[in-house]
Image 1: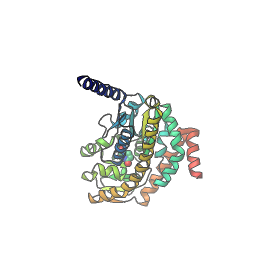
Image 2 (image 1 turned 180 degrees about the vertical axis):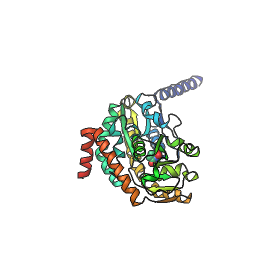
Image 3 (image 1 turned 90 degrees about the vertical axis):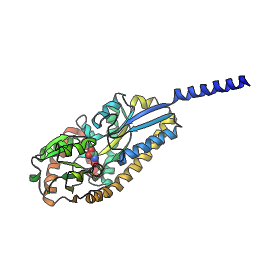
Image 4 (image 1 turned 135 degrees about the vertical axis):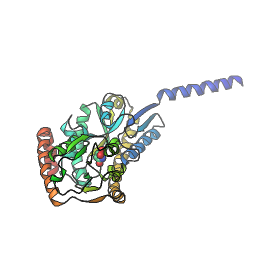
Length: 324
Ligand code: PCA
């Protein structure tokens, strides 16, 4: 009897030892609040992979920039400090103009148009990421972008000298061209920037204003539908190549579900959050004709600048999109 017990214990330890050696834990840094739909979709994706591999690959999400801040995530995953992460890709347009393809002003202004553009641009962005040692897994758009202000605005003249929170190359450039004063701030620090007066306006979705309860500081949201930027989930290439085929298949299936679910949630969250801003006491309305026309003229300048920097590849994307 004693021998059998000893044998059983030895087997149990050996089994434990094997699964512990095989099990891997991947940290997944994310920049936005845990309650934001991107973060929720990421958490479901992580659970899907963990369950689908019976715990052999456990993915643990770290929202709110708690592991790496938004502007550190891409580099952290490229260099293998984290194996997987999510990042707003247009924040990296300065590294490669293709990363700003989703932020060309007024090229697309609805989810359907945006998805059409992404069907052309997505593979090219994935190739650019691959050159940065990143494997593209899935991505989800933010709702259309509008202007948050602490006063009524009717024209670009009203924007002059306003301190403006930017989140990307395009948002900073738009601020410059409208005479505002851009300061780059991650969404996780947005409430603080507004509370301390570091920023007094910004461009973003209803989602981010709602998540950050910006009615505590600002009074107006102007729907402009300037563009729909995208968050991309990517994996370090070496980590990806180290996975066996079965694990890659689980990751791909979970990524496909996350992409579809994320898009639907982004759409659903659009009206919900605009209503939420109103309930918070903000005036939510479409921007007036003068402001829209002036912003469109600035958008044309930015489009030309983007086309110039993105060369043949960029022009091919825009031409193909327009011919669809
Ligand atoms: N929210 C993100 C990016 C775009 C958006 O709608 C932000 O403001 O940081």
